[in-house]
Image (cartoon, rainbow, N blue to C red; front, side, top):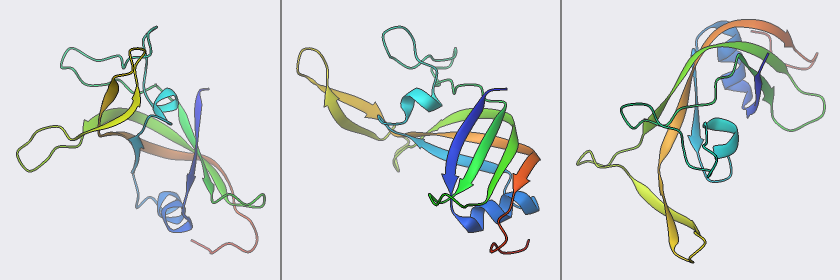
Amino acid sequence: MKVLNLIIKQKYFDAILAGRKVQEFREVRPTTIKKLLQLDADGFEVEDEHGNAQPIKYDAIQFYVGYNKDRDSALVEVLGAHCEVFVDADGNPITYEYGKDKGGNPLEWWAEQVVYDLGKVLSHNIRDKSKTI
């Protein structure tokens, strides 16, 4: 099983366990692109026939609440995932520069996010001091 590990806040964790939060959104950044999107041999995003970036296919997401050693966690099924590009008021993709290519030219990135459709909670570990759902 291919699992993505993510840190979330307690209120979102509780909503997932209660079935009120059925999607998880993660912004794609230069620091997270390797764990969120499929990349080709040159490190560029793999795109579908419509030019949309393709998320890495995960079977489940392991959610952790915060960074403490003793924390709530849950393994949640992923039903599907897709990418959404952020656009401005005119419908144009929002871009930003980060890093440089081999020639020293700035790299232009599209602001985008991966949307994960969540399924059933496969397992969970709730610490004693946590809120009840």
